[in-house]
Amino acid sequence: MKLVILDRDGVINEDSDNYIKTVDEWIPIDGSIDAIARLSKAGFTIVVATNQSGLGRNFFSVDVLDAMHEKMQQLVSAAGGEIAGVFYCPHHPDDACNCRKPKPGLIDAIELKLSVSAKDAFIIGDSLRDLQAGLEKKCIPLLVKTGKGEKTLSQLKTNTYPGLSNIVVFDHLTDAATYIIDQM
Image 1 (spheres, rainbow, N blue to C red):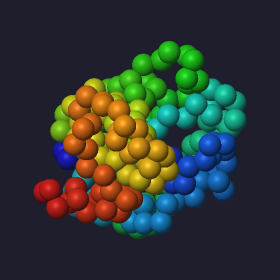
Image 2 (cartoon, helix red, strand yellow; image 1 turned 135 degrees about the vertical axis):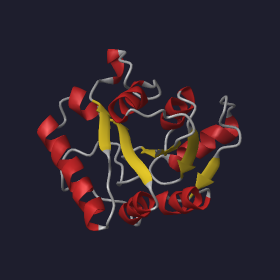
Image 3 (cartoon, rainbow, N blue to C red; image 1 turned 90 degrees about the horizontal axis):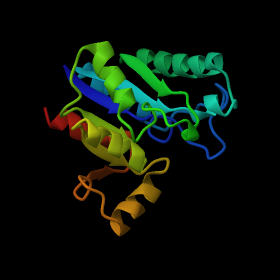
């Protein structure tokens, strides 16, 4: 199984410092849905791993989050692709859970649910914590400049982070998908 792990906010959909709290606020980034469909059609198993502390902060309910993910799934399906699963951490950052990225718990859950190793899977994120979670599981991290990606790129240029000194950077998910498909 060729696995690709995607962060959600800032990679697939527009991000907001005020959180994405409704289905209407969940707006795909241009090209992201088609990029997921292209990866899926190329034989990759696509999963989403996302921190959703808005649940722990009571900004939205599980039902609303499920509706956002249903919208995402439907758009990808309509484009001819498939997302094998959406894994999320519902906890507040102060909860000290193991599933909140940069900890690897979400990727552990993906491995368990899909009976697959995430080693050498691509993980695409816009934040340092996405990339660090992937490194914990020996994934291949890719950074996109959408969402918080420009800020993360600036952090990487001014600080040293083990395993991220030579990270490959893309303008958006579309370019990252092309890169991954070309690696086949």
